[in-house]
Length: 278
Image (cartoon, rainbow, N blue to C red; front, top):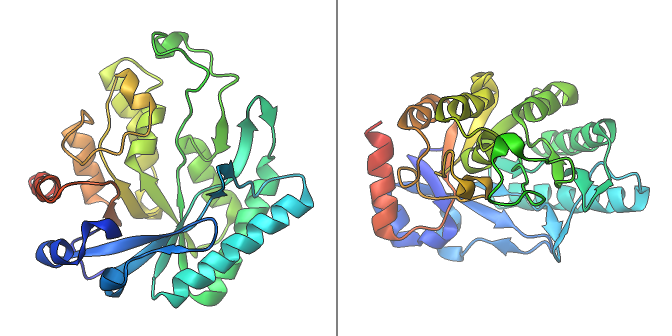
């Protein structure tokens, strides 16, 4: 576990990281390059592994063996890079494209097999992989349509967007070396399925039904029962409308918390004060 209070993005800068006792989660881009300035490299704890390149989403569940093989090799190289940078863990997206632009592209079984292969590779390097819940997409739904009336049958979908799929992937992969990464902003896009605040909060809590599996958190705020919550808001915690009780449950998780968003020094200080006051 990290010796730091929280992690944040490398762009926060070395002086602020030192002042607030924060570690860093860096990023490995789809082209293999690393977003980790040299002056903060000594604070790296985790690396976010790539899931797309040149605007194209990667698909570990693709029926095209060449496409699938290329994705697996690129992510394996990123795993090796993360370990070489001194990271103890890597955050990985599910990368199983269930439906994109109206076309079904990935099967559950192929996605599970691909992710299992990546976990096996990470296990050999000693890097802990944390599987992040993807956002739920609302691309086919007009903003003025209430969620209860929304037809999402043509919306884009990544396997692992709902809590049932996300947790189900962990069980199907069957590797103790894999843990889960809860992204609260992504979870909010699922809570957007209800316009009732109580029901929406219950939807958020569905991500917390197996808390012992969650080893990493991408923590940010969003909008509950608000059309803006259909998007991946990534606001500093305490500046949106997610219930304080939900934030408190996230704080109670025995997990490493990464404040995953851009913020001014004043916003970051206020966010940490909000979290510590929960």
